Image (cartoon, rainbow, N blue to C red):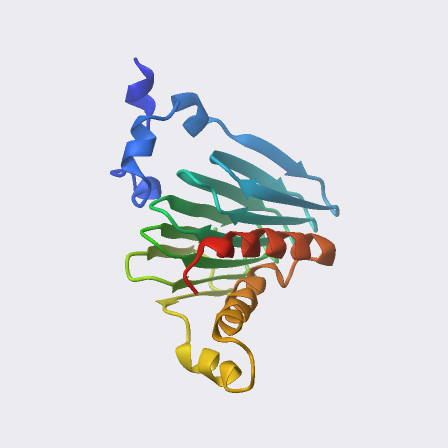
Length: 248
């Protein structure tokens, strides 16, 4: 069997919004390899990513453990961060991600959060800001098995499109087999709020700076729940550095 036979395509549900041409040109090993991470019971671990290509992470969080993953996807080519997380009793998963940029690139996050035991919690916040003909994607799946009572899971995706040619796609999924759970998802895609920008401009703030402040507040949401505040600031600065090429 050739490598091409193992390559995913946009016919695969988890890759439906991906860049088809980029997939065809990719190395099959890059698309099928996983980085394995184990968080021992009662311990905490935090990781961050500046996404530049295709990366797949598989995580298991032990009883009472906590795993934080934060990421900025501002790559100049097709880039995707995929994370599959399994939570044991009382574990917590926190994900904060931003896709941002222009050009004609596709940037995406794909998550699968498996609540395999009771009392676990998860929270995912993704923000997208794009212009030109760029695309920002978030595919988020939450699975709650039959015995995973007292699960509390949430995911939230919002996108701002600064130009008409940009686009965003989201596909939230909930698969719940337990009956004593709290699961929620929300999604919104739109343009920058012009009235808020004009409000600040009327009070002496130049319009371009006002719009940049709006974007800053918007993407800062993704890192609000990161326990390491310094790391959150660095990620925010990384995302904002890309705005220099945007038409604000």
